[in-house]
Length: 229
Image (tube, helix red, strand yellow):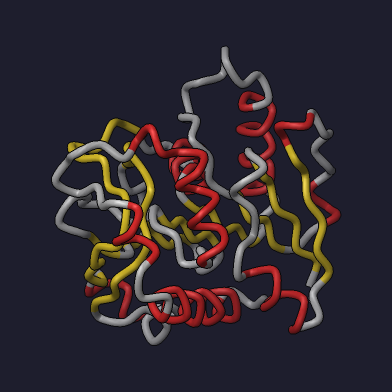
């Protein structure tokens, strides 16, 4: 399978997904939007992965590449491509599918459990996502569930943690691809967001117990394979 990903900042790449996709024999290409790289024609890939970033979906004045990226995502949806959106990528997908993206009541940063929505059980992702999993978060925005989509789950701080649509489009507000190295990079670049808030953990809390990264990375591998990657 031909996999293409969109990257918005230097420190939010594929994480654990790169090794899984490479080991499974898929070809990988990328557009680094922050470098001004040109978006490809959707015909050159089978699966599109839209990564995260600290910007918001409405920040087009500060990040002019957001406007063409939004058109590109809509084109990929229209071409019936498989799409995985993570964090900002999930918000961009939600907007492309007609849902509203807003500030979340809480900033959610660190390890917090997500409870799977019962509706997900009857999909190909039902056996991939545990009933409850402690996953890694780093976001302040949220989104509505597009019409016709199935909710993925919720956490105490954020009602909508993702959606699955048409058996090929998956949006995840949380991060399953994060590794100890990529978490360290997020912290180094986003330390100003680590305020004393109910759902914001301290640096040590996020990096302690590295086995947690192994657990979410295994789920991520299952997600990619469920999507046909």
